Image 1 (cartoon, protein in one colour):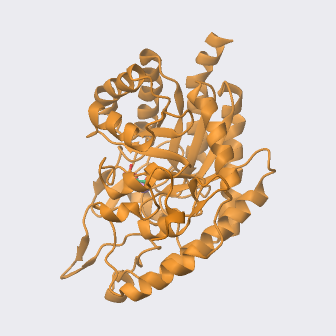
Image 2 (image 1 turned 135 degrees about the horizontal axis):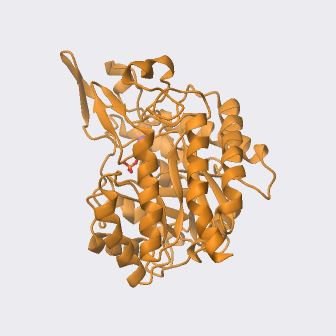
Length: 404
Ligand code: PEP
Ligand code: CO
């Protein structure tokens, strides 16, 4: 490896290869994989480093206890998505949420979509059995196909090229949908490490940036402190999110923050709690206390989706009342702990989908079939998302009145 590629800290975009990497596909053809990696390494970045730097600067405001982060979009993007239409409708959904939340944000409202790279999914089981056959699980369109057949489920590295192309298109549409003063940034889970490595680029000062998205996050299933994913995310300059599930204890969290950002830079880390409405009351207070007492600049936000998932038959079920209850608990706990409630992370669609139960959505499991379109987890539909924004605005309004 050439010396010019080694950063001053001894980290390199390929350093993760020395560590255990969970949730990676096994590609049958190593030559095909290497050819794809070389193509991506020479391909245009999905986002500009300057924009990712702007996001870092904007997020530092939240670390100073002002403002709100709205992050949301599909659980998983699909190669079948009508990109221009999808981007336009998502931008309009962000506008509708911002109209409600801007007045109570108490600072800048930062918008980050789960788009232009949100193609890889962690799975609980590596295999899926239907009737009498067992095949590799579907891991997202960047890895294999959703159809339950041998050919579709074979991981194909060429899918990374297609995901990159779609991401470039989505990022360009997103930039065109907004004036530069009011950007919607892009984000995804940094899961498929060969893809992330190939799109990692250096700036003029020699610092490394992921150019696959403005913000990347570490998933709850890949957050081992000495694992490959934490290694990759420790070396890039982008804003990095950390999904914090119910099994994370305070010592693990402090170790992870130290691993990802030992310099404790304001605006660098976003802790995304996803505990479940029934668990958050027990798990979050000690975690918030630990980050506060350690003087960490990391911003706390809440993902009220992934801890509130149950299963009915083969279908994942989420209920709006549980989602709202976890947001209520998050805001209440943050107040008690003296921590800034920094934002929400949602799986949401601008379409009239019938994927989450409750509110102005399907009332019973029988109604879920009507317009179930998700490529992975159930999303809030447009009206459910807007109602959630109203609910959050009402929760935050008293805080604004207190500080006014
Ligand atoms: C997700 O955000 O789609 C996801 C898989 O989340 P988590 O890692 O929190 O389960
Ligand atoms: Co999901």
